[in-house]
Length: 377
Image (cartoon, rainbow, N blue to C red):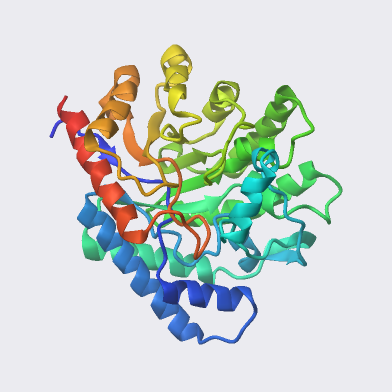
């Protein structure tokens, strides 16, 4: 079909129990069989790619299978991290302590290690990254997926979840993170995969780490994060890069979220052709109008990937609704510059996710059907 709207998602997908068990064995420092670990990871990646292709997804991922989470996985790949850091709930949940307590009692908040940076950061090993790339590229070839992408943490989101206790300033810490992560970014792109930078630091960190600042002061910090990120991306073709901005993949009030309109300029500054953002989240669904009203400020090379399915509820969005959401953006920039995506990942933390695995893939299948409807309209 001419001008077919392609489909993708943010990255993480539900992991099987054997995958989760191995990940937490490593997380807890327990003994485990590395050969069996590698086999379980490769087998699972093959399965999740097959399921994505079966659902009709054009641009697939490895589901972030081997990672404990989208940000803290770096502690397993780089030296300089140790100990643990205090947990800090988002500001909106603190305003509703009864709900926060309920989440905690029901297991609604994931538990995993959040070390601090307590020494010089350097590469520990590249085997995890190389294995991830090999597993995904092999599965793509086996199941004939059109294109693949791999997630990587941005310097800013690492600084959010792994606080600095070593370097003289946050700025220095960010700079070092950018220099270290540069090689990971380039290795992913050199393999033929697209690189996705996960950047909740450009929105979520406003109501987690920088609650004492004004919005304007926070935007200045977010712009610094983008400068560091762009420096790390300086040798990579923008057409191979995706960036995801996020206010937190959790069901909650979200009344402390900074508006997209205040982060719009920052998002547009990232040296990435593809922009992923939330539009199904009830707190942000109305913000498609920002893109309409600021159309002239969207660089011509940018491709919009709005989240047209939610990743925190087990409702399967109707294809007609998905088509309506997509048409709002195709009316702004044209079908060739819109890809259908999800609000966030379905398995942001290993073993943790609000959506049942089978329903997650049903939502992806509905995403594909909705994109087909929007393409034909």
